[in-house]
Amino acid sequence: MKQAILVAAMFFTTATAFAAPAPVSDASSGSSDDRIAKLERIMKAKQQGEFEMQRRMDALQNEVLDLRGITEQQNYQMNQMLQRQRQLYEEIANLTAKSSTPTASAEAQADPTTVAAASSTLGETASYEAAVNLVLKDRKYDDAIPAFRDFIKQYPDSSYAANANYWLGQLLYNKGDYTAAKQAFSTVVSKFSDSNKRGDSLVKLGMIAEKENDSAGARALYNKVLKEYADSASARLAQQQLSALKG
Image (cartoon, rainbow, N blue to C red; front, side, top):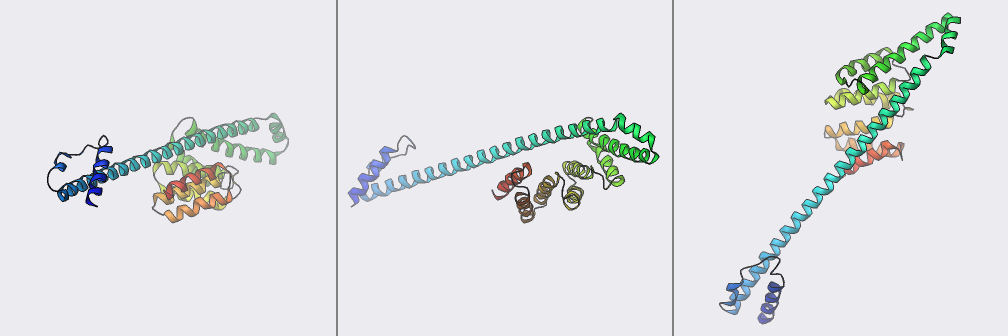
């Protein structure tokens, strides 16, 4: 039995010599028991080395996968931001065209009541455009925050109020003011159920919950997005955040 173990051990040592050379020169001296003990120690050391190498390879592979996931998420968020900007530019262009329509001016001259309504609408539109332009054109993010707050205060039921609250929440989130950002996003969720910004606001609330170490709350918000806005851009982002949270 000892001879069989000795032969097997010597064969194993020879077969793996190129992978991890071991000092086997002493294995030929001494009694059979000593040689077997030495070879067993060599085998054990090689096995520990191989295990450690595999562990390191697994760790490196996990790091690569994590970095790939982060890169994909950042690319997706960048594409989403560009898409949102294009939509806002189109929205502003449409609003500008409507506010300068000659027909509207003619009707306003004919009826004093219409004049007052048109003036109010123009002020609302111009205020919203000015706040958005501070972000997209001038990149004056700190100035945009009070601009959106003033608009929301003056026109709380405006058709642009949901977008204004979302923009305010995004600007505050970028500054790290998560408490105020949460309030803005929550307003979109609770008050503007038909807004196309509601799903995005739920995702942002989930991300804020993560910042606050509320993993359970974040999962609940992401799952709510998946349930209520399936197959949407918001749902895809929620799924990414949820997968990263589970990982």
